[in-house]
Length: 107
Length: 118
Image (tube, rainbow over all chains, first blue to last red):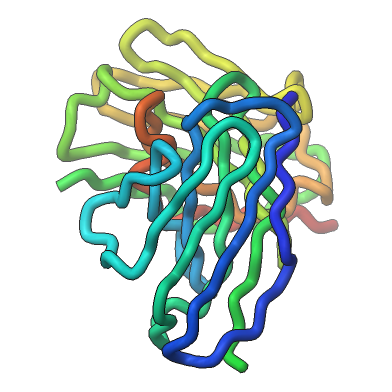
């Protein structure tokens, strides 16, 4: 099983600032890595797939990078609607696995 | 528009059985995997199981193997997750989501809250 580890667990950022979230896989997942955003009381939403491809309707301030075992999600200028929990997930092999999440909070 | 509509919240006692559902629309039900994801109160996302309605191929997480059963009815474009004997530790929100090996989980249901309490 490929273990996904996200860091930090929480991040305090002021609106307009940049946020950088990390996700590490215990073994290579190639570029088969997705990021999801979850707001309180809502279902998760797909943000990125293929490590760096924005899903439909996702603003350009979200970008993803990495391959193999190290991945990064960057939010270039945080807006109020971006404060949420972010999860990475590998879909390179079964079992599918999620990271523990990073909570992005308002500073 | 892809839509996944899940059945309503459930309150059950330990030892009872339960089957929750996820009705899909807006796409070819038999052409995508559909999976279930658990979220315990205040916790993260955990993949439970997945099924390909086209041929009923299924997979499950080792953590949930033998604990739940996944199924699908192609005739009504609906996927199911069922338990034969619930435990208090099954209390959680369960989401269904459409899955593609190219995109991950690209569309999600609204969630079904399962509460197991004596």
